Image 1 (cartoon, one colour):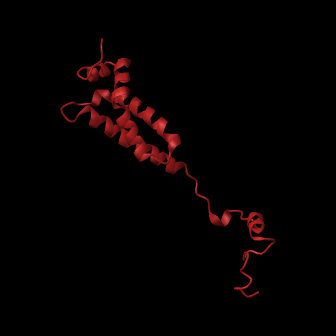
Image 2 (tube, one colour):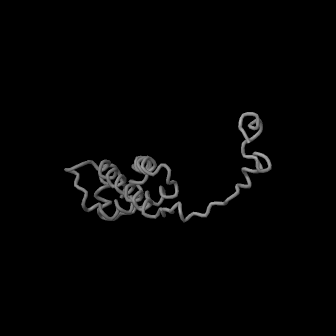
Image 3 (spheres, rainbow, N blue to C red):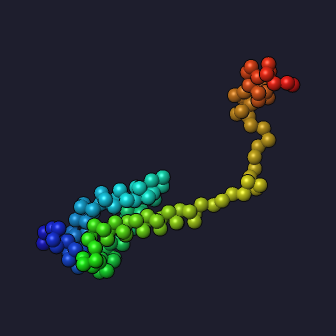
Length: 131
């Protein structure tokens, strides 16, 4: 059976993979834009989030009611909430480090090399700063 705009929801409810491919081709750009907007700095999470969105559509298509909203809005809602879930997961994974526990080197060798042998004031600073 050919999947069209008029029958893809019905076919998706029957778990027809061709209907899912139709959703990916027709709504993938919209869903990708939502994910990229919400997770713009988390490139590693974007593809996984998009896969979870399509899985969520596949698993929850039975709860879609055409009388309540359009399929486009329903998918966009799933995308927004999945992206928020990924943000929450990312923030939970971040480990905070106490600055008192950090090991900070006493001498910054790169700074010494840049400024000159041990003189952190830089060139021309001798005339302006007292010794």
